[in-house]
Amino acid sequence: MKKIKLHDKEFRLLIEASAIDLAVTGLAQRLNHDLQDEQPLFLSVLNGSFMFTSDLLKKITIPGTEISFIKIASYAGTCSTGTVRELIGFHKNIEGRTIVILEDMIDSGKSMAYLLDLLKARNPKKIYVATMFYKPKALVCKIPVDYYALSLENDFVVGHGLDYDDLGRNLPDLYILDNRENKA
Ligand code: 5GP
Ligand code: MG
View (tube, rainbow, N blue to C red):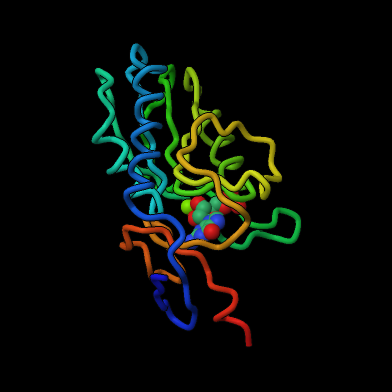
């Protein structure tokens, strides 16, 4: 079994890059079919979505396709507001546009719920959510997950864009935290 160590933790292979590529190809085909007349603007949420975005967009054949990158800054707010998130460095006019948000992972759905509210305020025609990985059992916010490549159980994973304390994003395969090895 293929294993890796990042910082203090051991991870084992969960999904090989070839299987991720296959699922992303299927997702691209669905988008090509559904949005062929929409001149979509893909919004890639950095940092985790960089690899997914590159994999996916090479397979998108829709005329008028555009790609932009967005980053969400999170910081501790006051007691009543909890974590405050804001869009940084994104000033594009999206009024009347068909948007496809590209995420690495939807877990609780809280990040996506915030992002959807921020983008809806800019009056796009329609917003679709597309994620590489999706943990349906972890979802607590009512958000639409229109497209996903692969669904996962509620485990912590790294690789293919996803990090553990900044390490592991460059790994082509997906790894799962190895609980047996990490027990004290
Ligand atoms: P949510 O707001 O849906 O709970 O969390 C979404 C974000 O948390 C993802 O975009 C991702 O950055 C991070 N996240 C959620 N689950 C995992 C995981 O299993 N591994 C890693 N590395 N990040 C995760
Ligand atoms: Mg993320």
